[in-house]
Length: 92
Image (cartoon, rainbow, N blue to C red; front, side, top):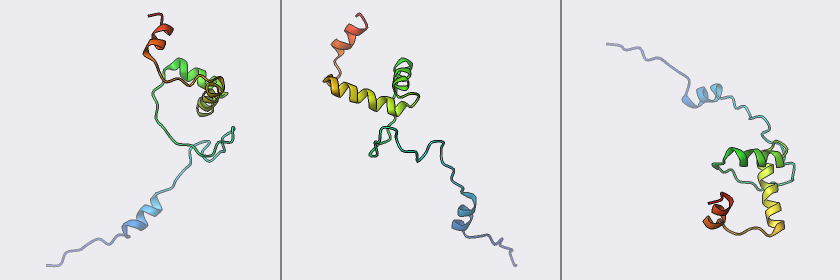
């Protein structure tokens, strides 16, 4: 018996037709501070720190983080995390 086999476009052609890439808002825009060598990282941050970094960066979180890091470097405050120092902040 004869069996009808549907003919479809090759897989790579179908994928090319369906895939339309859209860039995220702001994608490709140069950093305001001129930084070009950046890495993408996922971080967990509390709301108060987020608000502070965004305020420093005038609404731009990445810029705020880089600027805060520069300020720490300039002030010489680059000591590693210390639980004892942290506890004194919390009044423990």
